[in-house]
Amino acid sequence: MFNGNFKLICSVVGLMAVLVMGLAMPGVTQQNPLSRANVVNAISNAVAATLTAAEGDIFDTDNAKFYSGTKMSFAYIPLHPASRSLQVLNENLDRLFAGENLNVNLGAFYIPDAIPGFFLKPGSYLLKLVNKDRVAFVDSQGLEVFYASKVEAKDTRGQPGPFSSWKLTVDDNPSLIIGGCIWVGCLICIFIIW
Image (cartoon, rainbow, N blue to C red; front, side, top):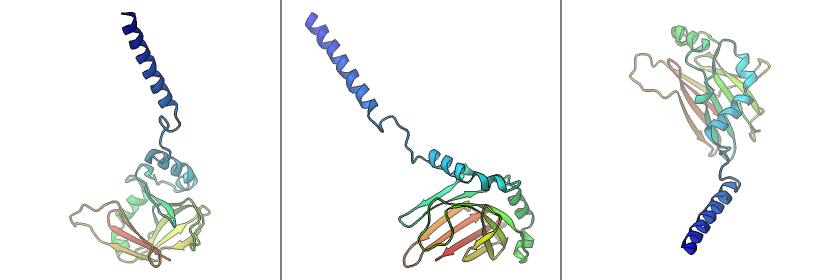
């Protein structure tokens, strides 16, 4: 009787010791630092000044899109559907396709580290749709510091969808091409080539 209880107590103590040691090991109970929530939070903190500077625009950090490869990393933060710039764009699509300048924000672009051979410095930039053929990268000083290599604005009104809100392609052979299509009432494809 005593021997059976002793074995049971020893077994329970042994299992508890294994459980406590297992939970105390680094990484077992820690949250993953590369989880989507942690990355979104880090990007939100990094681009806070840019996101605040865009008057009337609400950025949808929960739907940020990320890319990380051997040569570069970046994030695109779209505008929330309730943003002022998207409302202005949707109200003025006829003017856009007539070739007029609109100068409305499309989102934010964040570069965490220097990209070899690319002159945009690490930081956050507003993506501003100047007209149907030009998208500018605007720095924290409000200066247009870079223009997308190619822009295609397609009138998709009345066409059956669904159009994804952001589609990204990256090709780094032989040169580097970033292509992103944003659906904001119409389809706008932005290409960066270097």
